[in-house]
Length: 168
Image (cartoon, rainbow, N blue to C red; front, side, top):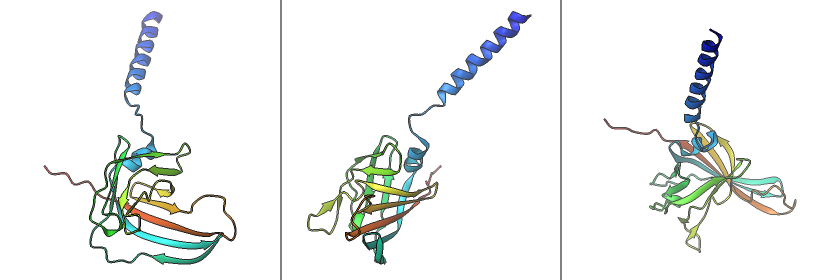
């Protein structure tokens, strides 16, 4: 009787291990938030600083006729559509998170209105907020150490997740 009970317990534990091992993924919950859909730019705010003192804040209120979308895929590629109000879809680029998962590194190259003609605006972005429905990224002079007299510019990008539309 004891051997049957022990055999039943061992069989149950093995079944639980097999079932639990099937649930593992190689993507973290934070990475799943990025790649769980397409993000639409909802707001863009630029703050100018001298040292740590905010001098002025400018909210982008342009009448851009194209929506801007940032898409992250589970294979660690991403695209940005219509950056800087220029109708375009960037070539697929890689994205990753730093070890502490506080910074996004996206190698996406976008056409823009600068003299260079293109930029990598999200090459090193601070993740200020990331949730199921919203994401806020800071770009620009976001390094933690700076001179108190240094002029800095930080751009804050507010995104909202777009609903997936399925057809039947």
